[in-house]
Length: 59
Image 1: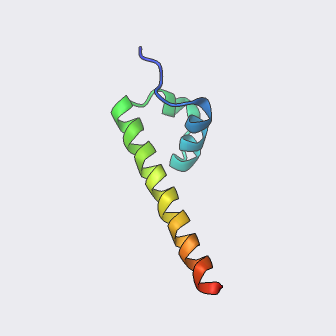
Image 2 (image 1 turned 180 degrees about the vertical axis):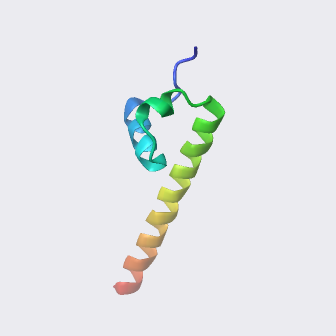
């Protein structure tokens, strides 16, 4: 079996994002894992952009 292409910290964050136990995440097919990781990253970027726009409007 291949080693997971993500760090332990990333795996913990992704498991929390997906609301699944870490053990389930570790047995997930690699293509699904990477897809969910991309979704998590996109949601974080979108949230950061939204926060920066809101903070700019208040100034």
